[in-house]
Amino acid sequence: MIDEVHITDLALIHNVSLTFDKGLTVITGETGSGKSALLKGLRLLLGERATKESIREGCTSACVEGRFFIDDTNENAASSANFDVDADVHDANANTNTNVNANARDTSTVTSVNATSANADACAGDIAPTFQELLVKRTCSTDGKSRVSINGSLASLKELAATMARTVDFCGQFEHQRLMQAKFHEGMLDAFLHTHTSPEYKAYHQAFLDYRDACQQLKLVAEAGEQQNARVEQARYLIRRVEELNPAENEYDELTVQLQKAQHSEELTRDVFSAQTALSGESGALDQLNTAISQIQHAAQFDAALAEKAQSLLESLYITEDISRDISSYAASIEFDAQALDDMQQRMSLFQGLLHDFTPDMAQLMKNYHDAKQLVESLDNSKEHLSALQARVQQAREQLECAACALTEFRKKGAPLFSERVNEVLAALEMQHAQFSCSVDMVPLEQFTEQSPCAVEFMYCPGEGMQYRQLVRIASGGEMSRVMLALKVVLGKSDAVQTLIFDEVDAGVGGTTAQALARVLFELSQTHQVILVTHLAQVAVYADTHYVVSKTDGTGVGPAETQVERLSEEHRALEIARMLSGKATDTSLLHARELIAAARAAD
Image (cartoon, rainbow, N blue to C red; front, side, top):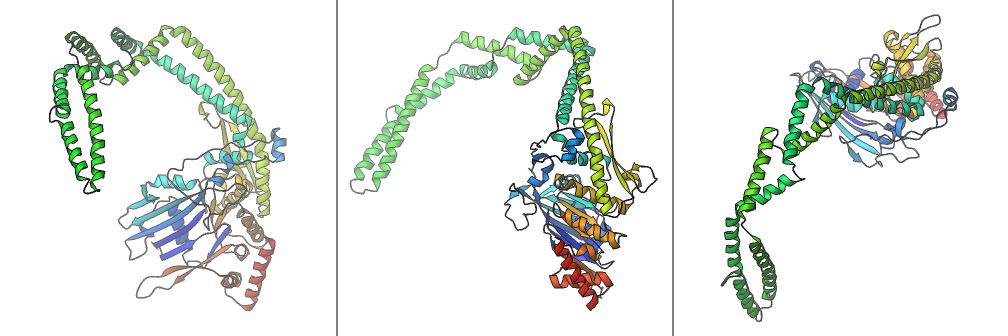
């Protein structure tokens, strides 16, 4: 959910801060007061491109900062919470209740925060939610440069958009990031049907992996056969050279260490014996330490503070004696064997020749050797192996096609119920003559993906007697907004998106439709954080939080400025009254209070 937003020098906004709570937040104000600039700031936080024309007149840059609390529990609801599939879905698909497996998300770009934050209780439930704090900052300057930071680290606009798309959806006219792209339609249907927990999906997913693996193996062998003239000869040569040397495991590293010692045995002997003499010889370090200890111990009779120094020297003496003995043993172990040295040098020469011819890294050489053996072994039995792989691919293909048909049928059976639920909400929104449908078709095998063999697309019929056509092509902005609203209501907690921002979803709405729309938005705010720009008093009365946007007239000191105020209960009634009649009168104020009271009673 969005916790806080701070905007400076954007359009008519000079300096505005807003805090958002759970539930329904409405933003109202006169036309031209600056609501669009406020929404522009939110869109910048979601990854929209900035333009220098958006910067406030007389300023060199604009800045938008936002803090978000992402509820991992809710975000993964479609795949990690336990859902009981609706009984109607069971009837349609002849399946029993299934539970969704946990699907952990990478949150390496966010910092965990305690879920006891005042604003972090947006999605309270039976499972204690875990919230992640996300700090986003956008700046744009008059030189056309735009900068993005996420949690203090620089990021690209693409990274920002991808990060925010999973938790916030901006539902303005013609700005439905998901609804306007058919590739997201399948995910919405699957969230409703809990497809990813179904046996059909699991069987398809495994069949796809098996088929892909079989094809990759066949391709590898086929390519190897085509390139055998050069690659196989080179592989055989490498195998022959390595097996002639027949290196033991870690032999090269051990030989390097041993040869280093053998080649410098004289220097080792000289240096070690010199060190031994310096430690234990006449007047050596041990004798000097003993003398020092004796003197300090004698002096300690007159000053007890020296006793600790004597003890420290005594411990140093013990350590030095141990080192002296170790060095003595090491010196005795040094032997010079000319024949052994010659053998090691010849062996190292063979290693170096091999490394020079192929690769300077021994580990890589052995990897290349094993790869070469695998290639040669596969080609030695190429005909039989190729036939076996072709049979495996054919069998995997048949199993995949069978699993794809089953998964497609599962979605086809569930799609009518999904469409029915959406149409119920559309009817409640006074769009009973419009019809929503979900088309599910299996695509050719070449277009199968790991997740799906289907093409899922939402279809729309704007009125009776008209044909269904692609929703993204024929729905108007207002219709698209209400379809999105209906989808959000139907999906409820199955939807991973936590925050919905609606820009004038109520455009052109009035009367009973306005009442119905208000109720639907309120119900949606029980499962999502909903932020809404509205001109309807019937909608505004349901708000948990109400902001009013106003504009001060420009003066000789500076240009006009947009101001945003969070309304108290009394001021909220005044704003509702203004929305009802253009200004607050005794009659409109009384009506406003009645509407607010009725909305509270309906909660």
